[in-house]
Image (tube, rainbow, N blue to C red; front, side, top):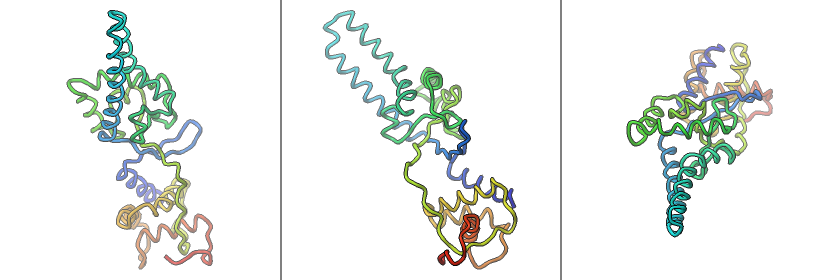
Length: 246
């Protein structure tokens, strides 16, 4: 029973590309790694504003001769290598491009990235650039479960979609039904996670996930999704008289 509930949770996680991690404080987080497309778009936004700054400086610094050229090269180095790391370490884990796309950099354990992680992942961008035009980083993201580029592997970081601050939807109220067997903590958590996410899922998606638990359920006229909702209501202690019909 517990293994089947666990399999249901694992199936849903794999299909939705969700990584569950436990922070050093013992808090469990569900992280949604960002794929290559939003990350490339964020990189392009950062590229545009960096070049805009350099272009403006290029309009004035040549008047200073060699000193101006030296300042321009120094600013170019800072903008390309250190400023992105500063944003990720001190500004909520996001450069302006990442912030515009709703992305942020975290450590593998879900904690905020610090200077060590931010510097490592940014200074190793030269490795991601190889052999040409960031092909190494793109290939690494494609084959990595967390869409990690080489710098992320070295730094122990993830680029994720920023978690929504909206409160989770309440579990739909249906007639409660006890599970056919006792559930351990992981099984109860998986069942309640599914029930809380149910309002955001399409009917087809909800039934697809619930189908993994169908073998443990006795024959019934209700769908597996409705049976799991009923069990979640039982775990929440809802009485039959308090539940509405589904």
